[in-house]
Image 1 (cartoon, rainbow, N blue to C red):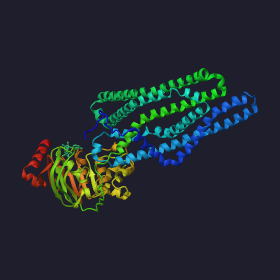
Image 2: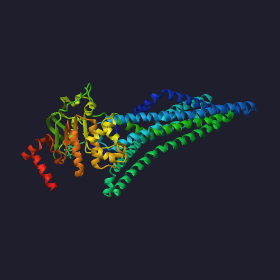
Image 3: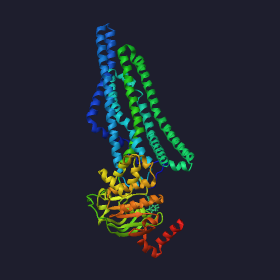
Image 4: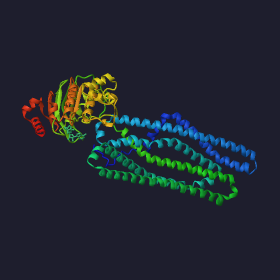
Length: 592
Ligand SMILES: Nc1ncnc2c1ncn2[C@@H]1O[C@H](COP(=O)(O)OP(=O)(O)OP(=O)(O)O)[C@@H](O)[C@H]1O
């Protein structure tokens, strides 16, 4: 899958607005009781709204014109009580819907996050983190108003429109027809606008995502940017992306704004047509003043919900693009999943076999070519070779981070595809080139290796890998709070903490990728003895460019161009004077 950087708009899969909406609204079904309550309140408000013009008509025609002021007083009290109840109902409705919608957003966000956790490396290789963040945060937030207004606008306003039209036709069909004469014009305009608007909002969401990807990448690499004095260049990129973001917004919103003007125009046309038909065609003497006043109210009661509905529609096409992006990730299957009926991998001894393993990341270029080896439990294997040779790829296949195209990877005789991923990875300890530490205390970071580890286990693990002494020198010892990525600690200290985290998880198979690079000699001695404690009694794979760190390995595999070109212990390989010897000598020369 080609990488989608902040410079490229994402390609989203078109699923259709209706299908997306239906899927979104399904979340509301979990809150049936609350929704029914809100609809009941809304129904009451609609009835009060519909009654108000009739009350006004009756006040004019039955009481004011006949001088019955006692009756008028009773009618006013009745109307005031009804309207107060309506206002209280609206408040309650807003409270309930805010609660329901926020709960739904939490559910969607949790579903998305849980799903993302199961996705394979290929998914993360193919897009920047900022674009994933944009979907988890921005796109999901944009769904709140659609969900809320679906209940509070769509249903009640639709009912209001139907009821108003029915009442108008019952009272006076001619006036009703005249009032609604501009309806077909409005429908045509809205259809025209919506077909174009959705595309524009999709583009805007993609531009937001690009911006988010850039900002995330920029902040993650801020130290490099500042040390190379590249602030001006990144500012230029930022300006470019914000301009695209703004322009796409203006482009989209301009079209949306037109809907309001169309409705205003149709509303005005309907009102003019009502009075024109009432006064000139039907005749003033055939329609009472009360009926005219009532129709004046009904016409605004008809166009108000139309305006609300069109705003809702606008909002829907604006935000449905966000929903599409959220559901697209939810529907992305992980390339690495448990097969039907997989077994749990029982506690392993640590035997690893590669049987003619061939692998390609993109399905075309072979990165590994028929690699075979047999590793006994407890053996330490070092992988060396030029950069890009395939060392990391080999160790990634042991934990099944990618699926191979040909051959088999066996752990204790089990094909890694025949056991559950969780039971497999649970027995692996992986230390990558990036000793990632989370914000939180030192204790929390070590406990990450085994979530139920006791404080004693944590301290024992730290002692075993020589991390205890430096931890105790910190102001709050094991309770010292680390910032994101372990800021505030030296590289060596971060490595020692990562060792402790792996140590506490007590894996049967250990993978150390470039674990000892870029630290000073004194720390390296500490780290080296930490590694030795870690390796004891486990099957281990160590990838290190510095050959001095792997002299004690039981066997060294020299990898080149996706195959094992030499194999043996350090002394044997030196004696062979082949690829390993060349590597060793070139490093030695560099040191001298
Ligand atoms: N996620 C990936 N997607 C596509 N190609 C990849 C990916 N990771 C590695 N490669 C390619 O696969 C080949 C082997 O990479 P690998 O990381 O296994 O090499 P390596 O021997 O570990 O290198 P180094 O010592 O520099 O870490 C390289 O050509 C690399 O460009």
